[in-house]
Length: 197
Image 1 (cartoon, rainbow, N blue to C red):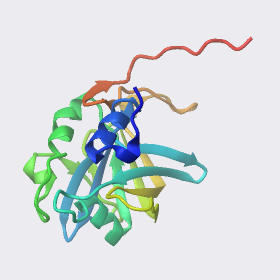
Image 2 (spheres, rainbow, N blue to C red):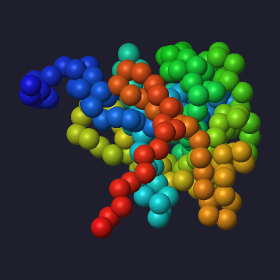
Image 3 (spheres, one colour):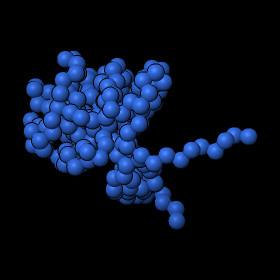
Image 4 (cartoon, one colour):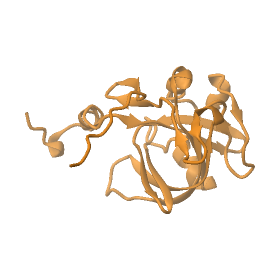
């Protein structure tokens, strides 16, 4: 079956891409504005480069068409903290995707504990395996639509001591949660690559 995206509804395009580009890692993004901590997950998230260390997240708009708080806050403060999600955080991460009124903190609404690692970046979610502290680099204009890709420069990376198995070689092992179509799944099982002859 062929789907012509020019003739497809926006929701159908999302369903097709979300269920065929799998798995998609989750960026659990913390931003702040006027003392209000905003926490929201985004599964359109990818590493772009390690030199310079750069990631991309795509952030949309609320139902009424105004920018989501994450987008508005990054535009204003030029900062965010991206936390990786493991199974211990799955429920709170999922609840934090609920659209709340501007000025209402997901941290308070869903009892998500945070901690300050760097004074000049938003808090990190407590007990996550890994977090990226990022500066805004640029928006990408896709020529219309309501989703805005944001390029972010990673300035600091936190990794929980318990998931570092070899500090000299920087070997990190944890079971990140990713979006698999409409569901979530841990990505802990590894398959060794075949040997190249």
